[in-house]
Image (cartoon, rainbow, N blue to C red; front, side):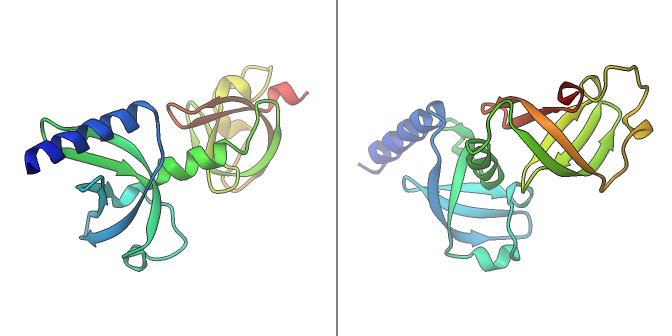
Length: 169
């Protein structure tokens, strides 16, 4: 009977992942690298890097957290979830393509600028910075600069927000 219930639980998890459902689960254990939660009677893990929290990770014990599925593999009995993805998707639902946002530059890469627009990171790609050619975003921006940009894409499947400053002109 236990195998039947486990099989049914895996089927439900596969379905929830396919439907991109947000689940809520309490932290039941933790170690140095990950946190364990229970979903549909099965233990799942969340890598420490997949958390966004104002408080130390140790304070999350017994807390109920919103989670998104990262991997559901019934063959390998592996259930991996993400707290960060659930929070990003929740924030993305509050945003709209065409909306102007302000944020601070967190990182500058060769391909663009990563901007914190309120607890989520959005990408301003090098192609969307200006109509003029630039070799590097460093020519225009510095870390911690405040930037005003327009949202040009919200990719819920990949949890990505794309921005443009050149479309503001």
